[in-house]
Length: 151
Image (cartoon, rainbow, N blue to C red):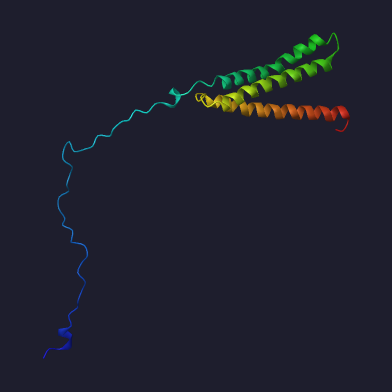
């Protein structure tokens, strides 16, 4: 009679994965490499029209920067007549008019979809016009406060 230990042999599960056979590395056959296909895509600048209203808006904004250069010359010319308040109103009105024209051009440059090239010009002009209008508004409020004696 055999002992109970000899009858019970350990039963291990069979390996799920086959044993790896180590061999020489296998390299691809010469000429088996796939050449990547180069697809020509049209450049972004090739489609659409040049954003002329945006560029013109920036040019008009450039004119607003020259107004402070002309102001002393204009005040000197008006010093003989003494109508400084009229000249101040004309300078403020010219600045506001240029800002509104530049703003209208910037909006046209932003709204029209076919003006895709140099769209940044219209975006930059719109931002500059917004900042200029806020500055003009603050200047007007400050002048109003000074003239009424509140400040």
